[in-house]
Length: 210
Image 1 (cartoon, rainbow, N blue to C red):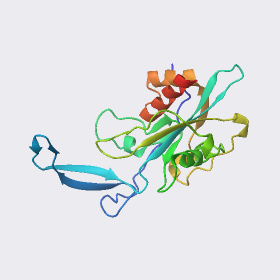
Image 2 (image 1 turned 60 degrees about the vertical axis):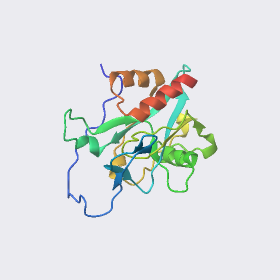
Image 3 (image 1 turned 180 degrees about the vertical axis):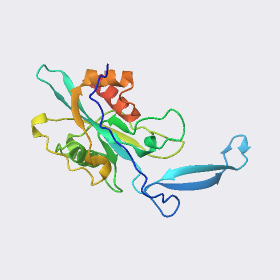
Image 4 (image 1 turned 135 degrees about the horizontal axis):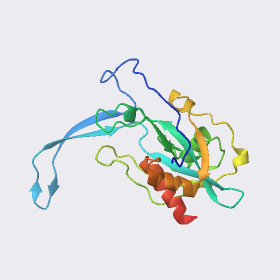
C-alpha cells in the first residue's frame, strides 16, 4: 500500500535536441590531471566535471504540528528530465517527491536562498534568519560536480500558505504539494516512495531534532 498520495502523471517530449550547440545550464569541463603525493607524480589521466553559474543549493524542510501535536512536513512533486531519459535499466518515472530546494545565486547567502525558494515552491513567506540550520553541509555528487548542499528547517503556519509563484519554469507549473506526518514521510523513504537522497537526509535529520 502506498504511503504518500499518487504522483502527477507526466510525459516529456523532446522538441529539439541542441546538445553541444551552445552553452547551457550545465557545462562540461575536461581536464588532464595528475596526482602528486609522497610517492611522486602519477601518470596523467583525463577527468570531466560539471560546472554551472549557480553551483550550490539550499534544501529546506517546512514543518508544523497538526491538531494532535504530531510533526508534519511539506513535500512537493518535482519533474526530473534526467530520470525520464535514462538510457539504462531500470527505467524510472520522471516525477519524485522532494522537500523544497533551489540554487543559491552568486553572492547570495544560503539562508536567503532558502527563504526565497520556500516562497517560490511552497508559498510560505519567511525571513532568512528564521531558517534554522539542519546539520552540516554535504556534497551530493562529488565525483561529478563540486556542488554543496546547505540544509535548513523552518516552522510554518499552514493557514498562512499562499499559492506558490514558482520560478517560471514549466517543470514547476503542475507540482503537487502535500503536508504529511513526518512519520509517514519517513515510512515513504523506507518504502522507496521518496527516492530523492537529499530529501530523505533532510527528513531524517529533522526527526532527530524534533
